[in-house]
Structure formats: C-alpha cells, structure tokens
Amino acid sequence: MKIESVDFFYLSMPEVTDAGDGSQDALVVRVEAGGQVGWGECEASPLVSIAAYVTPMSHGACKPLNAVVLGKTIDGPSDIERLAGDIEMECMDLLQAAHTWSGIEMALWDLLGKKRGEPVYRLLGYKEAFPKIPYASQLFGDTPQETLEGCRSARKSGFRAVKCGWGPFGRAGLKEDRDQLMAAREGLGDDGMLLIDAGQIWREDVDQAAARLPMLEEFNATWLEEPFYGGAYDAYAQLAARSKKVKTAGGEASHNYSMARQLIDYGKVAFVQIDCGRIGGIGPAKRVADYAAGKGVTYVNHTFTSHLALCASLQPYAGLKNDVICEYPFTPKSVAWDMCANHIAPDANGEVHVPERPGLGIDASLDGMKPYLVDVEIAAKGKVLYRTPKL
Image 1 (spheres, helix red, strand yellow):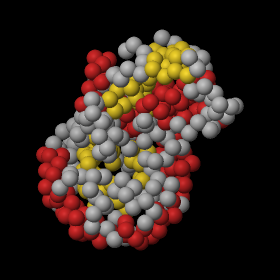
Image 2 (tube, rainbow, N blue to C red; image 1 turned 60 degrees about the vertical axis):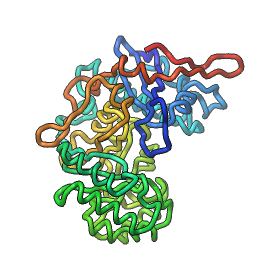
Image 3 (cartoon, one colour; image 1 turned 180 degrees about the vertical axis):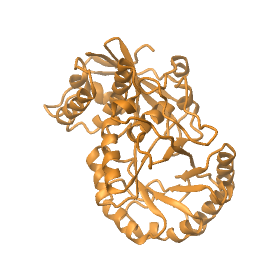
Image 4 (tube, one colour; image 1 turned 120 degrees about the vertical axis):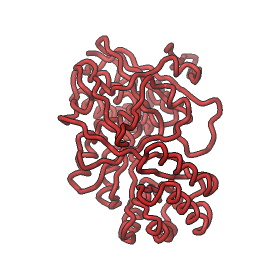
C-alpha cells in the first residue's frame, strides 16, 4: 500500500482555558492507503503540529513531514518502523516532528490492522490482551471540598483508583497540600488506590517535593507523578532515594524512546508513563514497555484526551499481564468525547479491555467532530500550504 493522503483536523472547545486539561482541543489525523482509512491523534499544539507537516524545507535535516511520508509503502510493521527512522534523520532539526508523527503513526497502525483484520496489539506480537484497572484521572479541585466531591463521584462510578493532579497542589504551603490529600482520601475511601500528579510544579527542587513525602505516606498515596521537569533525571533519582513507601512516576514528557529509557535508568522511576501521542506513536511506546518489563519498572499509559488516544495508548502493554494500571480520562471536555463514535467503558469488575476489532477499534465520529472543527489556512510566499480539509 502507498500512503495516498494525510489529513489533519484541528478541533477545539469554544473557549480554551489555562487549566491543565489536555482535552480542550485535539488534532485528529486521517491517513488513506490501499483503500483503507486509519485514524490517529497528536497530543500537542494543533497549529504547530500541522505546521511541522507542511512547513517549507529549511535544509537537508529539517524537512517537513509530508516530504518524508507521502507516497511511501506501508505493508507491515517494519515499514512503519522504517518510516519512523527516516523521519528522525530527515526531520532531525524539526523539533515538533515527533508530536506530528505520533498521530500519523497511530493512524498507520489502525490502517494496517484493518487491512489485516487484526487488532493492533496482535500486530505488535502479543497473543492476547489482558484487562487493565482504570484510574479516574482528574484535576485537583480549587478547594479541598471540590477534590473530595470529585473523588467521591469517581468511586460511585465504580473506579477503584483515582488520580488527582495539577490545580492548586504544590502552589501554596504544606498545610494546603495536606488538606487536598486528606480530601482526596476521604472521597476515595480507605481501600482505593490514590495517585498524585504534581504537574512538574517543583521544577528541580528536590527538597520541596521531599517535604510532601510524609503526608503522601500518611494518606497512602501509591505514587507521586511528575514532581519535576521531564528531563530532570538527577532530581528524580534523588527523590526516589529519599522516598521509602511512595514511588515516583513520570514519562509523559518523553518525546522519544531514549528519553524514556534515561528516566528509567537514571531517574529511577518505579512507574514509567508514556503518551503515544508524544513519543512518536505506538511503536516506540512498545519498545519502552519491553525495556521497562526487563528492568522491573511498571509501564502505565498516559492519556488525558479522547478514547481514540486511550485505545492507542493501551496497545503497547496490552499483553503485559502484570502491568495493570491504566489512566482513564474521567471528565474530559465534550470535544474529546464527541469525536469518537464508540468508547471504552469499564466492565462489571471495574476493568477495561482493548477492543478486539481490527485496527484500534475506535471509530471516528465525523458528525461529532464537525461542531468543533477549526477552519485554518497556512500560507507562505503567496502559496497555501494547508487548508482545513473536508471531513
């Protein structure tokens, strides 16, 4: 099959705020080849990612992705891997390339699975997909009461695990943070798994993060996620050495396999969290899952957008029986929900399953996308480089 077309659709809520909520807009990718259509999603700034696909070439190592992707052969997983390598070379100085390629790569796996009549996880080499325990991923409330109510709502919805992140946590004092943690634990209950995401708030300040360890232990938090910048491996390692019960987690800021590997080897995280919409797609995420398994590190997906992204993020570790935790967007914005025609719902046991349908198993909803579609035109030197395509 030859890649005939790659189309991008920028979707957005009518108003986008500065809340740490990645579901407020989306960049959906449609790829056509050999009579098949595949869908993917980039987890990045939509306009910048589109620009990386169409921008004029700066030099031999800074080409647009369309120059590398269009017309190439895709008949099997090795072709996707080869194309990824070509992009690393040809687009080396185009730093947005990994994010743009991530959505294209997802769509290629979806397309290839449909062509072969197999779910993506089998194309990756897994014989079966094991159920995962989803945690309701949500932001801390502006007040402890709001956090309590959010956690209580998740528990009533059947979730055994909840993650609270960003919001006011780490921005005030120790007392304020303890109040938030106490509220989260009260809302979740004593037997629920509590996960905390600091959203890189302490940058590289190990002492500030370590000051929260006693209260995290007090309320039985399983992990402290992203206390520092994604590349602050020394800070991660220092905090891991100082923490006894609460483990460190991170990895969503990894834009390639090597960054994730360094976080494991040098940052000493116990949980590595990979976003297929950032790291370069499903293929490199699977490499991280394999490497983490060999190091005794638990692999976890990172997903805070749509169920298309959620399904893609489950594929790399679908066949790992012991890695059972799964991030599940609990209260996404309507654009992230409406863009998909079907969704992954927890079963009666509170577990989620990868769809057994060919490809990713999540269908794009064209009608659901249309109300959120942003009309965009990018032009340079009097030439139109991109115009929003027809759905």
